[in-house]
Amino acid sequence: SRCEKGQPVMKIVDNLSPLAIFMHAPGGFPGDRLNKGGLITMVWENNQFTGRIAESGVYGGRTRIIVKTLSYPGGFLQMRKVVLALEGGTVSGCIVPAKSLVTREGQEGLYIMNKSRSIWVPVRVEGVVNDMAAVSGDRVSPGTRYVVNPHGIFNRGPGG
Image 1 (cartoon, rainbow, N blue to C red):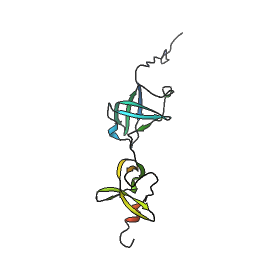
Image 2: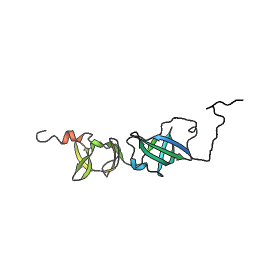
Image 3: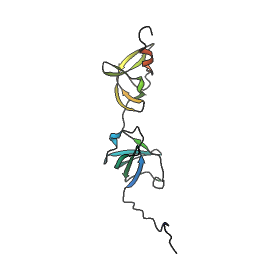
Image 4: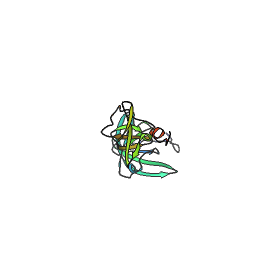
């Protein structure tokens, strides 16, 4: 039969080459994780897989990256457009709003509730994403009650 201009004749699939994924990284994604040759972890439909960054850069105000990966979830290859979650790193700790942190004498801390009063305790900030912080410390564990907006309560000044 006759083949017209732009009509596909055959499709060559090389399943021994890495899959190249072109994506836009979200604005809050850590820039230091986007270096060429670095590894990046992606999640698609509860399936986690890793790729190596082949290219990265900012074009038109948006961060674009090309990731090459050899292993990927089943059914992924047939998709043309997908939404991936990117993992910038993993930290342990309790998640609190960053506005809950109070600095005293150069140390970050939280006001936690102890019976009917609040006391300040030092914490280690393990990481911050957007407006949330992962914190750990001797007096902080899941379920610890803390003051969410200490700046509105404790910084009122005289007579407040």
